[in-house]
Image 1 (cartoon, rainbow, N blue to C red):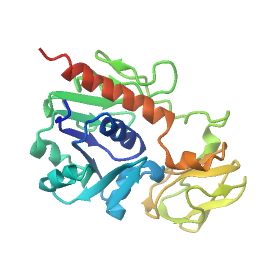
Image 2 (cartoon, helix red, strand yellow):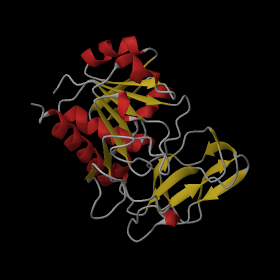
Image 3 (cartoon, one colour):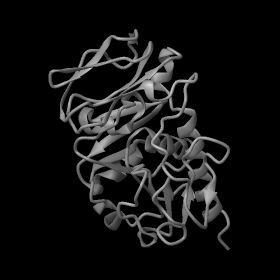
Image 4 (spheres, rainbow, N blue to C red):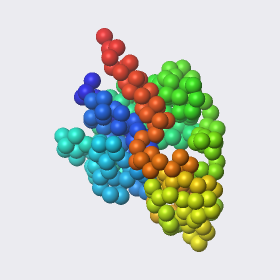
Length: 267
């Protein structure tokens, strides 16, 4: 099973949690896809940072940017995860992977993933129906079923509400009040007080609604109205900014279970 080739669509926080767990479990032949301008907020734990920096390390696992799928073998030999700019997922047809994991977290719709892409195709969160779109869906809503495998049906609908942290929900998420370019004032890991300016979108400041620590902050890029651009953690534990979340670990465990169930039960 260690020789399985895995394509993970997406390289943000959730996708990174998945790739990290698979890598640590011995499935090291992983390639991740993303856009040329990733929208990750929790950049301290997102392999898509390799798009800008050339490489990114999360909890001891390193990802490297490649320009062509033919370069991935060299990356794998260095025991790294490959990251490629490929929003159209052409790498799936070129690599012919054993497993495809759609971890884009589009939340409301399947953006094109189909069971024909690999012997095992996994969809994370709402928007997928098993076994029609994918072979298995992983529940992504917090609660009793987080990380559960669904072989028939769909995940719970997207609620639009962030998970509560110490009783705080909407107040911890920063969103762009308008379309424009981000200018950071704070950095990931910085302490912040209620009312402080965390960033600007063009000339408009975005203030922290609560005190805590800046757990996530989008890069200085163009964003659309209501785009998530920051995340304040009221627990104010700096190490949380640079370690994989409990939710990402639970979902990653579901993905690993699905792969093991499929490939350890072959006759």
